Image (cartoon, rainbow, N blue to C red; front, side):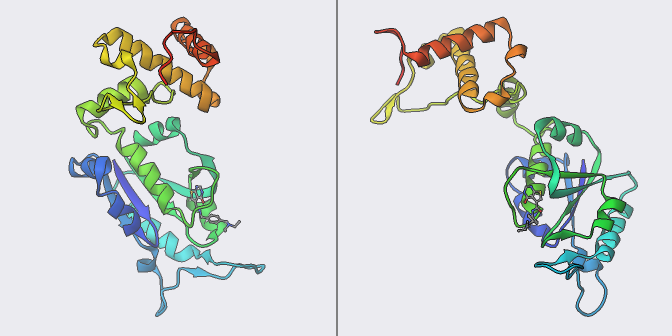
Length: 256
Ligand code: 9D3
């Protein structure tokens, strides 16, 4: 998939996207990020990209013309049609379902705002969708674009190594939080590793992990738990977790 990133600081995103899973997806030709700076499409000696807001008030607003020229240049660089997504606090909140849909596109143009934002007329004319990554204040759209790119890159076929793909199959797509993880040493002043993980009994281990994933999701993110959609087995595992929380039977199985 091709991503055209429009930003006053395109390197902010392209540099970070050169590392890790996203970087490898780039090396493998699975994603191809092109950075565009509206400053390069601004007119005059000062190459202005922003101006003061009509009606007064603090901050600056990004000008129509440089952004329109930049979007046109990005479009013209590849024959495939592209949706324009604007990363903005006013956007719909990004979630994994939206990431999955966007990751299936062959081309996207991501527009990052700085300052107070972008002239509303440019948005109305050029933007297909506004996306926010959550209810907190960033300094610009770049970190949000990086978040979206990272989430889409790891969904490209072949982006993950075998271990990562296996983990995604077992945990990534079921909407539950992860189970706890432990490594050496077995005994440590901070505590010991739950016995079941040392048992070699793979069915019991899988069962314990599933129960932990269900239990932790119930404790920390009940909004993610669609009780109705849980299988009978999952409901029983969650009930078992809840019973253990309420107070394990004396002599029985408490791990902490
Ligand atoms: C202090 C400025 N705010 C006045 C009420 C408005 C404002 C303008 C521009 C707040 C943030 C920003 C920059 N943010 C983004 O461009 C952004 C963003 C975000 O701040 N939070 C979550 N998702 C996103 S996507 C783009």
